[in-house]
Amino acid sequence: MNQLLNILSQVPDPEIPVINIVELGIVREAKATSESSCEVIITPTYSACPAMFTIEEDIMKIMKENGWDAKVVTKMFPIWTTDWLTDEAREKLREYGITPPEKGADEHHIGKPKKCPRCGSMHSKQISRFGSTLCKASYQCLDCLEPFDYFKCH
Amino acid sequence: MNPLYNYLLKFADDSFIMGQRLSEWCGEGPYLEEDIALTNIALDELGQANNFYQYASRVADNGKSEDDLAFLRYEHEYINAHWVELPNEDYAQTILKVYVFSIYQKLMYEALSNSSDEDLSALAQKSLKEVKYHYTHASSWMKIFAQGTEESKVRLIKAIENIWEYTKGLFAKVEGEDDLITLNIVPDVDALYEQFIAVTEKDFADFGLEYPTDHFMQPKSRTGYHTEYFGYILCELQYMQRAYPGCTW
Image 1 (cartoon, rainbow over the protein chains, first blue to last red):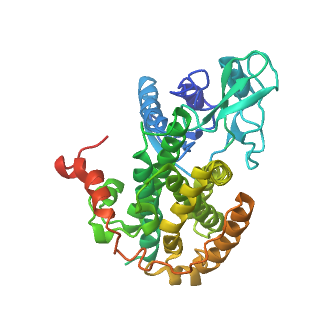
Image 2: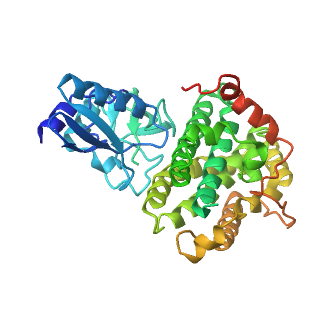
């Protein structure tokens, strides 16, 4: 990982603070354009994700603190997908209590039972297709009875 | 006028008005999960509108931002389909609106994903993922209403009788669209309309609903002529920007 990406990986996702914007796949590229300025290419996760505004500000701020003048460029293509989440990030999600998205985002696994992030049981049911944020759906484990969030594949 | 600009506005306006209409349910949903679901869908639509307005603003290159396009145009300058501006009415009609609109968007974005215009294709692919969720949600409620109680079925049938005649308006073309079709940048909506009929006929059979037999369809969608409901939405939507010019959020 280059030096710029190292700095950027200190920026957490505003809604899921255990994972950072590099492992989430939001930061696509970071390159120096002069000695003290750089360009950071980001890809939005969801069309209306409100966190994107904060993320842009956070990027500029952390780069400034590290002596860089950052320009943030948004690039749509190729489009962001949950398949870009690293295995490490998936495990962090699970530990945080959010079931990570299945791989192969083109298929929609809506409504099917998901693995409880706490007890690992597959005996669960969907409570709501839509959750507290655009990226999540609500589930309940029928063994340990705890409700949990599922990070929808996208 | 740049035909691509016009073409982008039709998507932006559709999603913008649909998002606004659905956000009217915020805090009013029949129960918490549905309140959240419709607000989520509304947010997706507003996000898509923002993306298309941004691209349109780039294409036009006339110094107008996406906020100007959304908040400072007049009624006749909006080229959304009538469908999205129709009132929510009861929950059955709202679900019918989301159901039909999500099929339209799904067919449209699927076809546009192959556009030779890279930006348009990316926006379509991104939006497609979102509208697939909307379709799954709305179609399952269509089935529940059709096969639920006598009252839920009656209300759904009434909603279909009320507004089905506006469905074809979603497939109305805008000025310059034929040129874009010739250039293979965009799909032909006439073909998509055929697919729309096939999909809804199959779904209706699955829901156990009779397919609408009255073939009259309201004209003038996307022409700048609107239904009587449109002015009210625009008033509410544009109030802040006109009262406090240049305000941002």
